[in-house]
Amino acid sequence: MLGQLGESAKFLAGGQSLIPLLKLRFANPEHLVDLNFIPGTSFIKEDSGALHFGAMTRHAEIEHSALARKIPVLHDCAAGIADVQTRNMGTIGGSLAEADPSGDWANALMTLDTVVHCLGSSGARTIPLSDFIQDAYTSALAHEELVTEVEVKIPPKGSGGAYLAFKRCAPVYPTASAAVQLAMAGDVCQDAAIALGCVGLTAIRATEAETALRGKVLNDKTIATAAEAARAAADPQPDMRGSAEYKRELVVALVKRAVHIATRRARGEQIEGSHLYA
Amino acid sequence: MPEAATVETVAVNVTINVNRKPYSRQIEPRMLLVEFLREACDLTGTHVGCDTTYCGACTVLMNGMTVKSCTVFAVQADGSEITTVEGLEKDGKLHPIQQAFSDSYGLQCGFCTPGLMLSTHQLLAQHPEPTEKEIRKAIAGNTCRCTGYMNIFKAIRQAGRNLKGA
Image (tube, rainbow over all chains, first blue to last red; front, top):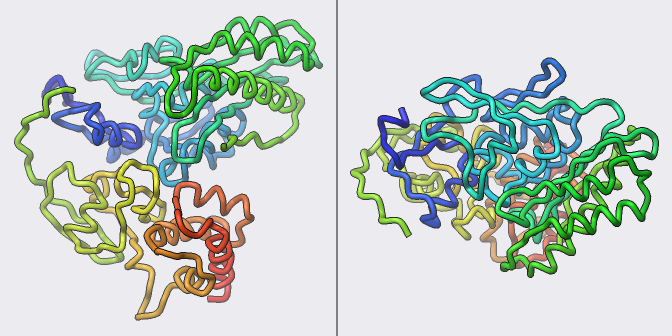
């Protein structure tokens, strides 16, 4: 259908990113195709070691899902996106398809084994998240293609994760955010994934920070080394939310806190990791 | 900036149930829900504050859940149940939430109040006796520039008690 409507037609999911962009005239589609009335596109289910989210699943549904709590990063992310009203409308598929550099989902999901299922006029395909997000506001989706499902592998036992964002207040995008996913064996970190949000054109994997943790006993010193590596990986732009320097400083603090929460969760502790407000 | 698209817009028919009453209107597809409520239905209790998905003055219930009506197209609400502040009172009597905001001085200028009362409505439906943390989280998307929020917290707790007694 999008093909018939021409180049400038766009899909409309929850609209919580797109409608503000339309008001700013940053997007100017001649037609919008509303996906909200298509049945069967909103679901959360567990199947073969992975959680599957329908593209039109609202952030609020994920926030209140007991199943999604199996991966704490997902609950942290869903429960912290903007405010109640936005979470009631906004969808996980729409958030990824919009590829907003400040969007929460792309950052949180980047620390997990995530694939995006897509469907277009030339058939279905599955794209790893790291290939799906290409640039600011640019995903791998072809013009007539849409997201149908987001699939996230459940991390093995002994894993823990956390997603933390620093925000001026609830409705605004974060100033900076950090997602951390660890696989622990006792005090030793077996594997680590660290992603940074709002400090680059897309979410950034801080690979040197991950290396700094892998195979190490996690203590204040090793965690500080990793956080410093994350500072170097961040590539923030100064704007009304803060200077580049300030955002790098935030990254250091967020990574440290997220690692601490992730470590405790890996030990099986149930702790809330909530966003920080100025 | 891209050239403004010159497309002939086709009016579409929608029927939206607002406060348990169906409103059938022919509208432009680009019309926002808040414009539909204020301009097509003449229900001006829902306010437009920032028009940027920030302030929450335009909060209404859509099928029982709060949304910012400045960030929903009216066509997206076709067939749904909308509750605005006008739908709270019953038989000329204030809703227990309205009574609580009045009794606890949970407002000053009143601009944010319709949105805050609808956010309270969803909160109390999910948490009849909310903790302070739950209240803070529930109204994080509603900006008040007068009260400093303390009396709003009082009003919400009072509203919970009013509803329990009702």
